[in-house]
Amino acid sequence: MIRELLEKVSRGEIGIEDAQEEIVRALYEQGEDFLLDLHRHHRTGFPEVIYARGKSTDQVLRIVRSFLDKAGRAFVSLIDDELEDALRRAFPDARTVRAGGLAVVASGEAPRERLGTVGILTAGTADTPHAGECGLLLEEIGVNVIRAFDFGASGMHRPFLGIRKTGEADVLIVFAGMDGILPTMIASLTDKPVIAVPTPVGYGLGGGGDTALRTMLQSCVPGLVVLNIGNSVGAAAAAVRILRSIRRRMNGQV
Image 1: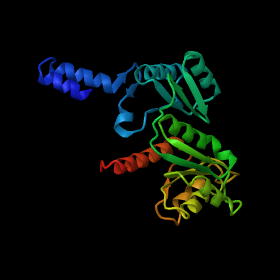
Image 2: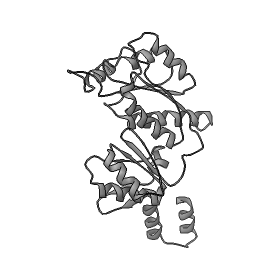
Image 3: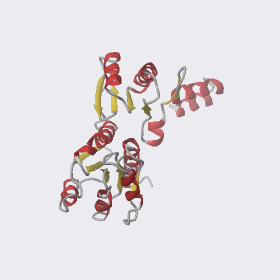
Image 4: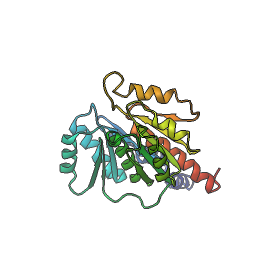
């Protein structure tokens, strides 16, 4: 699009100021109280995700509507049942899918082209809401996902089974609460990139994810990538960056 505008400028068909306005309109959408980054997916490989907490239902609906009009889909994080109902009522013809606190509202199906494969492991079933958010987001932007849930360290054999189940993955994302030891165990058994996400699962002192986060940050396995507590979106974004780098290298673009 930008190249076409530059060619029109060079041919004298449009002026520089008009071309500048066209570029700005293509990259951003200015609302009354928001500015959408429409080009982020093309620029970074990862779309803008609407952070619902702190926004009114009306604000979220207006932002989602703008994304649907411009990009054909919208991602909303930290939603509750009430907001999900509002989204379904406001956009009855759209495809709305929810996992955990993340919702996707789209006018069409997920991309058929696949960027790569990510294995998502959880230490326990209680970690699956966060893992589900990550998996849904990845699938909706064109990534194959292999899920291996409840493979925690309470049984020494279980992490090995999780590694086997996700054997075809290019990148691994591991969600764990409690003691948070599973990502370290997984990272010690593979040469694949491992992204660790602590979850707010546990009892009493440190049960909100603090203990899991500290354990992951103090991992004795070098190279373990650690996200903040419950940051499923950040984990998906990190995995996509790695997959895109792998694809560029395979295609001889690096």
